[in-house]
Image 1 (cartoon, helix red, strand yellow):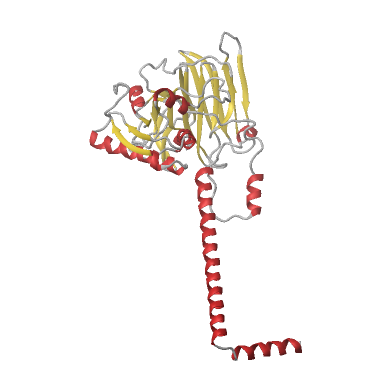
Image 2 (image 1 turned 90 degrees about the vertical axis):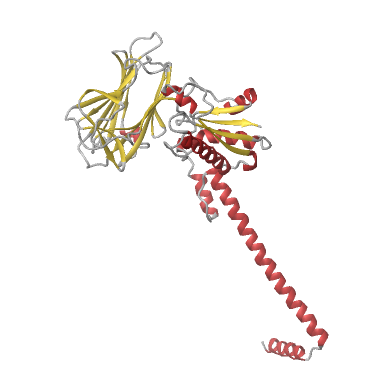
Length: 425
């Protein structure tokens, strides 16, 4: 300890006795220390920017939450991924390309009968739950209703999708809730799905029964119990139900998860909703019937994608599956699956340039449709940019209703005209 103090004292004394050259040397040394400190800070800032940029890209491309995560968090994120994904795919629903009927009840007057529907039993009126309008059964018995179509006996094509929403209340809100959907060929009943919510045990259950198709006799039946549904049913909020039918294959989905898969049932020509009793919440919201859907026995393949094939054959990709809020340029969430396909092609072909065209039907004036189509095209470009596509390779162009591909005199024709085109330049 004494030797250390003596050495320190000698060092201090030598510092006081340094000449001008030594002092200059110390000054240079000090400057180098400062410069080294500045460089260290700049490197830290650059590293932070790189990390944040990488996190942001992960968020856009992978849908991950941005922000700082520890190594432990990263490991847990991987471990939380279910092993079954990719082994047992149950989210294959794809809406048909041509909308035949749609009603979100948004423009209907509360308490009135919904104008796009017909009724054969009970009582129906427009009501609202959580700010969303729907067709509410206010009958003490069963209300039976169906969409108002030109041919009420036959309007379902051989390939179609059907979607609708139902509100599932929380346990204790009411005694029970029950819904049926029936399918017919003319007046002959072909099948139905029944589901019921009842607080207690079981909470949600149901069953289904369908006549076989393809010349086979008999029926195919099964149960829908709470154990099957609890992973996809959301209580106290709106739930999305969907059906995909292709000639004989019938699939039923709840919130995107397939719960019924029947390979061979008879083809229906119409359907009815049956809602029992008039308790609060009982009814149907936002119905969409469309032509087309998931291909029959779709298989994994290494062939060209639909986007690649269309562009290779025609130089453009045309889609009716990019949907917007009515009268707005706001993309609906279900549009992102189609946009992702285009993004995959663009990133695979980074030198390809596209004109992204927005088209509308002729409902409304040009003063409204022209800027709306431009805004919708720009919204698609922005979404593609968010998925990692180079904005330099895209130009948004609004075509309004000036280039129809079908007559605007029918719902089907107008649905075809409401489209987005990706034209390779």
